[in-house]
Image 1 (cartoon, rainbow, N blue to C red):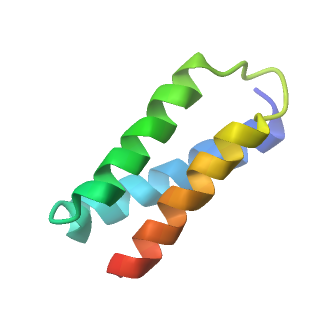
Image 2 (cartoon, rainbow, N blue to C red):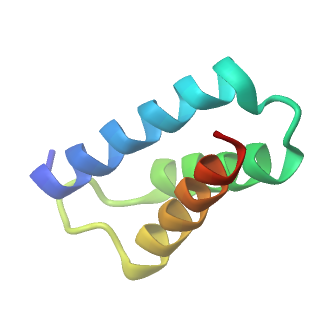
Amino acid sequence: MNDDFRDLKTRIRKLDAILMDRGLANPNFAQALSKVRRATRRGDRTREPSPELRTMLEQAELLARSIG
């Protein structure tokens, strides 16, 4: 697995923890995180994450900060 992709997966796990902790009441955050997860499954782990995937992750992180 590419190191950048590994970092991306770590960030997604942190968002998963936020979702379980306090984000269930925020459907926008839950949908954004779900979108990132789906895109990650389709992504090529041997290459750098795509700019679109990075943007989706950053949007989910922004929503997580707004609920936190």
